[in-house]
Picture (tube, helix red, strand yellow):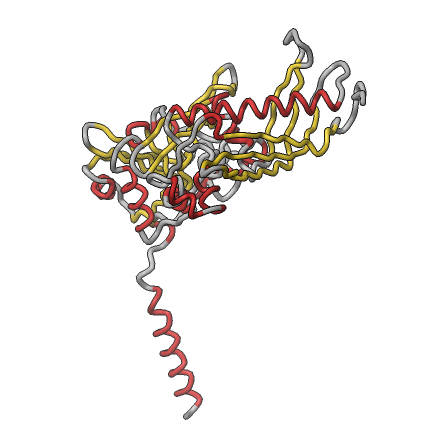
Length: 385
């Protein structure tokens, strides 16, 4: 084979190999979905799609104020798919779903009997991922989706897109993604905790309050129905029962007059739940151990006093949330799963639809062990032993 023929043959092979890329859509000719909101009104699903401008995502610093960061489209349909196809008619570029990061469900949507079908829609679609975060809300869907990040940073830096950042500093309600949601719905007690998102106006700029999102509690969803919400101080027990919690806080009184308080940081939390079986009845013992760090206060307090009051406060939080769960007929701490892992034969005898009967005295013991009471970086007035 001559040199000319070899070069010609090589060029033909290269052209044929490149031919497979000709049908790929150019990135600038696509719209990218960042989040989806789902509402249910008048027997129809109302779907909100948030499109993100990737020109504002490439950097985390303040975006160009002249450039639109996100835009929201809305359509209604008998099914989620019908509403999405109606939205396709109103866009002028191809819509790409591979960067979708969250689903936001309204109060009416989570209460709808077909809510599981909503999750199924996004799980089946080939472009979406299993790591999509799931939230519920009682506020307006579009108001929440239009909230921008503090200091007008990239839209990818908002709490809904990346809840792990705030989880590290305050582990109130653990974020949940589609994969974990499906797992928990299919394991005892077939219920799942979904973070509840609300709008607050704690931030201010140039004599004007700005909106920001906040996790205020959680909703409880089972395979058959939505049980309701647990919010604020009634939801704090869920934080202490999660062994993955990074950091939390508890405020305790320093005297009997409730005039002086001390806030304590909780770190390195470990949780263990043991089913105790007696006469074919089951109770649960809870064991917690962690480290505490004291924040600013004036006066003296003993380590024993700190340990006692922190333990008492955490025990109260756990029982308060447990009671709220019982009022909703829900196994908020997933005790049925602990029994299932420990003694599946007994679980099969006691379970009904994956759940076991629980009462207030089903928690027979809450043991709190504080490994260390740290005064922090510097002691203004030392702790007395």
